[in-house]
Image (cartoon, rainbow, N blue to C red; front, side, top):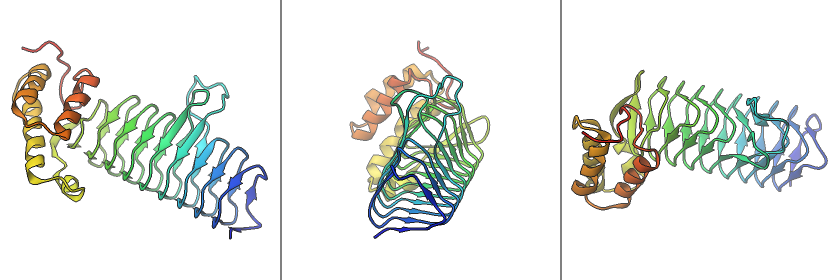
Length: 265
């Protein structure tokens, strides 16, 4: 049974699931879908194009599917698609896509803290944590199990891999390969995210192999091209090695804290 305050505005065309709580002064537009078990707290705004899964908790003052902050957008219909079991704290803003029928996507089981902004066409993975006042520009991808600490800033069109940790206040202005820790400004590689890797069940042998791969990339005083060749030869085969190599190749070896060098020494 739903509990919907008489002081909330819910467009009659909005699709609301079962066991949903909508508190006073919530504003829900048409062309919205909200899944079972969601809780929408006072003064939250759910705008046209929101597709929200089950058991999400959206706190005071958040705006879901705000129109994109993009000069290219001309009013086309677009979406924000949110998975299940997410916590979205106070005054979070999530912009919908700036492309017709496009979507900004938030996975499942993530925690997005107060005053965070997620720009148009971003893809946020599962089990992510975005700290207070994180700012994510448009067309950014954040991998699964990744943590962005408070006040981190991710520039547009940057990709951050799985199981990364971006320290507080860090400015990400290039791609961040998976399993790494980044800190400071300018951004610096500080090691691998062994704590979370252990939490998700990776063995010590796997963690050692990941560390070996990144020693080639960040500590060997060679080009990224040669580091990639060394990783391919020296590191034991594993899904994690494959993910690192794929990330480097897909992003043309341009990653945070490493200068662009496609040719080798």
